[in-house]
Length: 554
Ligand SMILES: [Zn+2]
Ligand SMILES: [Zn+2]
Picture 1 (tube, protein in one colour):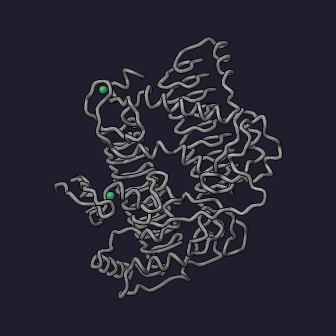
Picture 2: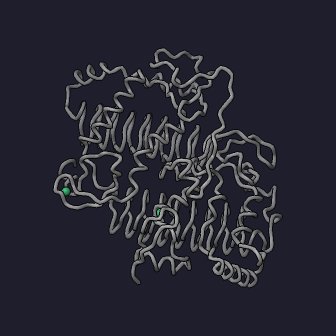
Picture 3: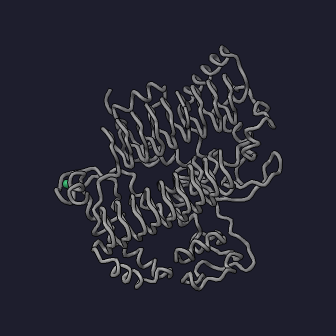
């Protein structure tokens, strides 16, 4: 088989279906893609809800719930514990397959009627104000976390505690405003650092303590701008910066990014122990192509965020699965599935939404532990085979087989999905792409103040601030400061944030949205041609091949 050149139906750019892609599509009986890899990611990520936290009522019991699903969803939202209980029966929504209509239309009809759970995740304590949260305690306005304790405004964290405003990080304690940091303690305003302590504004540092505004350092203490000082000199110098002031911190952040752009050395990718693979942020993966944020996987193609995957293609949010294609949040034991959305431990199934532990199911919503079901109706094994074959052949005739759920059926708008975080688009571009746009409902509070009117330093803040509603000038969303948060800021000398927490997360995340498209370039040092992932918009000057990076930095 040879590669094929195609034009993307979304962006009109030419793209290549690699010769090695084709056996995957054939094995899964999927048609060859009509969109380029980037548009495929955009499409699938649009189904992964980031959302906005809001208070609602469970449509089953009336119990108060906190959900990131918007009010505009067509289906009833049930409290998660009620959703997985026997208090309702998903078969009551069952429908016969109607040969005269498009199957996808019938699927979307069913999807719009069957209840969905208000939250993703289990085994949590005091995590009502969180989503996609697993085995955690006391998480507040936080998403996508595993095994965390006392985290606020977090996003995609593993084993973190006592942190505020941290994103994409593992094993942090008492950290603030960090991105892509690991195994660190009391780290602030830092990016891409590991095994560091008591430091500020670090970029790509390892095993450093008491460092300030530094990059590419290894095993250092008391450095400022990469220069070592005595302990006393260091402390005196740090004192000179009034870090309690927002204006000072913002100036320092600008200076920090100036150094990252001009002086820091950037390795051509962030991959660790990858073998024969392309993509960025790959750890311990083998024979993977065009994959991003992926752990310990093998033979994966165009997988975005996940781990422990084998022989799968075109998936986002993929965790522990094998032989799967074209799916969103298919996880924990998925096997031989295509076109599934938010499913857990399902096998040999297609077109499921919010199903768990199902096998041989086709076009079902909200089922648990079922076999041989179609459109939420139970069949015998032989009936199932006969009807699904008929559906598949009808779908092929209509050219809808292997197409994912339509974008109009995503639970929320593109602008409040992972797609917007990773591949941001304007409202106009989103609509042109065929996705939905979620409007902002401006809050109406008495006595609301603007984030721009908050005191500049933490010293000037009174206890009364916790009673105050604050309007974010960027997003027009309102937020407040909690008591615990205020004590954290006071203890750590941090000025009050003057923007909405979701805006802060998105803004912190921004560099990552500029590191997921392959770029051709030359190593800054040896001039060798390299493939790297830093968009020109980042303005990084010293991008190095792995060998030169090792020599210059490590
Ligand atoms: Zn495209
Ligand atoms: Zn080089």
